[in-house]
Amino acid sequence: MTSRTEKVAVYPGTFDPITNGHVDILDRSLVLFDRVIVAIATNPRKEPLFTVEERIEFMRRAMNGRDDRVTYDAMTGLLVDYCRKNGASCIVRGLRALADFEYEFQFAHMNRRLAPGVDTVFFMTDERHHYVSSSLVKEVAGLGGQLTGLVPPAVERALKDKLKPQAGASHDD
Image 1 (cartoon, rainbow, N blue to C red):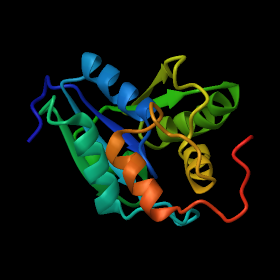
Image 2 (cartoon, rainbow, N blue to C red):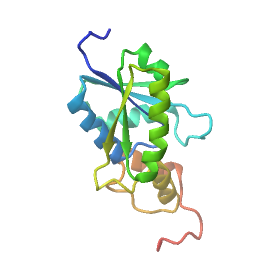
Image 3 (cartoon, rainbow, N blue to C red):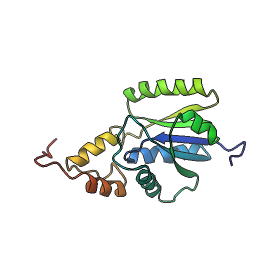
């Protein structure tokens, strides 16, 4: 149960897979919030490479038990309904580039319209991670590229196991 003064945020995403940029945003959000719920979204428009259970386990391993104020959950439906149900007054999002801002700006305003008591907080991605996306990581992994420093070690191993390099792929790109 959430106390009246406890500041709870939801950090939603498909996290397919989690990157070090995601971990950085989660760590930084814990400075502002008493509790953060990582909500692994099932997006019907996307075909995930990893199951929800695998993605939750990757996140747990990446956090390595360093903060018991983080909980992990799967979610479907409207994000604002999920926030209300879990006593969260804030949504955490990371921004890498201007294109992210335009996309997230629309969603933040729609969420605010649907749930006036739920705000969105944006974190600028650390410059070490600003070019990294889950999609790009999967593409690099599928072509046999190096992922060290981009994703947690467990994710790197899982990607190598799941995405064998394509025959004849060039590693020069």
